[in-house]
Image 1 (cartoon, one colour):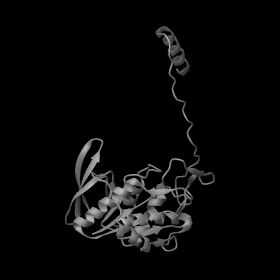
Image 2: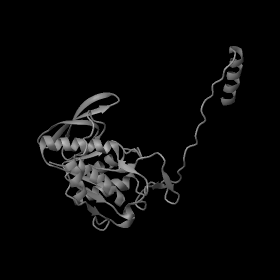
Image 3: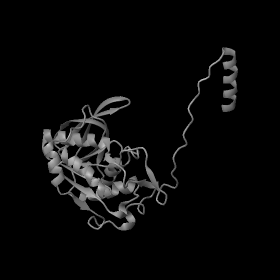
Image 4: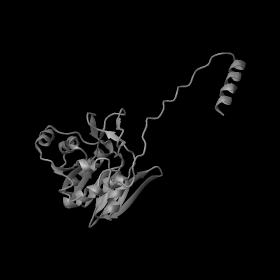
Length: 259
């Protein structure tokens, strides 16, 4: 069995800067972490390897600094990793991102199971995973809490949604969009940290993947951000003290001003 986990490095802050020319996040110089939901996807992939054998491969699309996220994945047990990086990939929307990742996944030989986090905390679109499955013409299961069984060409998963639990059987290959598990992601071991420092992470750029410049990044994105801004801060409420009849009149005037 071969498992590929798609990993995104996200800003570890809510105080982000925006490039006024491209309307994209400025990631340079900002502390970053592995997207929390992706850590659950990694944990599930590692547990499947322990139960059913195989290898776990990490793949991330981002600037060179995203290599740190892949090394963190290696430190907890991922076998090897690839960084999909090129200046021409910058500014990609979810469709361009998923298409680029699909090309990279195919380049490294594909997988039986592709695992992604439910969503990224810096975008919250939850579109890249389904986009990968659609581009690869494979099945997908969302809100996955666990994989209960892998059989001959199929697997059975436990899904958790607002409406409750359900079990779904899907044919391989398949993409799993992973939500929080019933356990926390494992921590790196000392041996894992040492291996992560030494492990070679192969970089895949547009030339290696044979991707024309106009088909990736901002140029290859059918949707673009026209304007981005910081929402205005709302003023806090106020506490008014006084006699009941005075407070009643004050409240009526306040409501008239709102309605």
